[in-house]
Image (cartoon, rainbow, N blue to C red; front, side):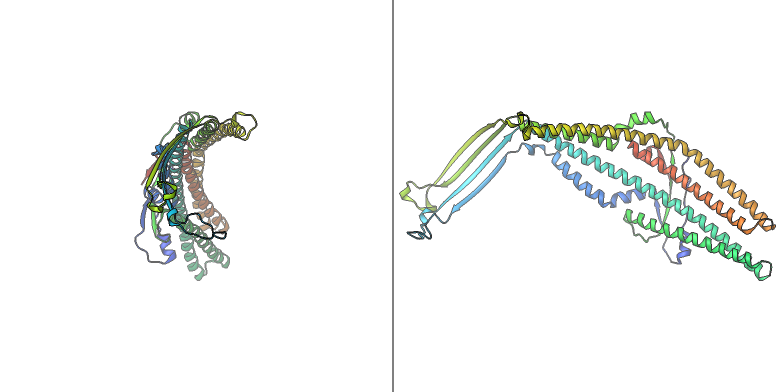
Length: 447
């Protein structure tokens, strides 16, 4: 089933209407547009920073059990002395002293393993978010690319309608000068030409606005002249919704993200329980250096002999509050269990919505071929009807209004065909996103 034919529509009418001298148009293909958007996306660059930071933490899990070191030094330059009371301020430099402290502490709890796993999970979540953002941007760019091509072809249709109206206007002008055309028909011919000119101008303005937004998304100059090349066509697939759901549903980002949420809540709950109910072992050592006089009566201030001391301690803490029903710690544990249960219900809801979306997309893809056949038939019928109406108009058996109506019918039929073709391409991309597969799996680019 072919979704699109080779489309390369030069913007010659654009150049003529704007009356601007431009350089050779930039040839922009589908893959080039996607690469430019990914390379220049500020949002992806921010996500890459978050991903790098999460990866840095995940590769250094040893930091969770790394002991805490502290070093301090101090000097008492003003020993304690009265100030407002008797005998008044007396500075005794022999009472000055200094200290140097070096300490090490380590806290061990059964929750450390869960804390490490939660850090790894945070990295996997960031990686999933980044990959999902890349795919969403890729699908958005492809859709916008194809939509602009569709608008180009619609502009070409509008240009053809204007060209025909101008040719007819020139013929009627000559007939009017020779007295062969009535005033009413001459006015109708002018109205037809101006209507075609207005329709083209309105469609061109919409196209230019969409083009500027698209080029800005790619990081290109919004005013540069481009020529789009390429389209996509379907790769034959067995669109069995239940089989596709079974094969691809577990890999959907929203499903994985919700499972990660459940895992994160479970790890957090495990950390809270182990922290609140399991013993904590604290090991600490400290070394202290200080000035120490030989006796209290032989103080020499900073010249006192150096002395030091080394100490160590081991403390085992066993919490009790969380075991008592109704305490704040006990309520926090119960609250964590409730959050996990709600997350599991959210997962069921997400899976149901995902299955419904996939079934709906496949149903629409299976049915849209009928719409394509009807749209193509409408174009052929409208073209044949217009040709017959033109013959009747030249023979004087058909009124001008009837001829204009048939021209509008053909223009509308061609426009509808373009819209249906784009809708089919868009549905194909949506299906690729819903199954979380590379769009090249279901479609190939045609340059």
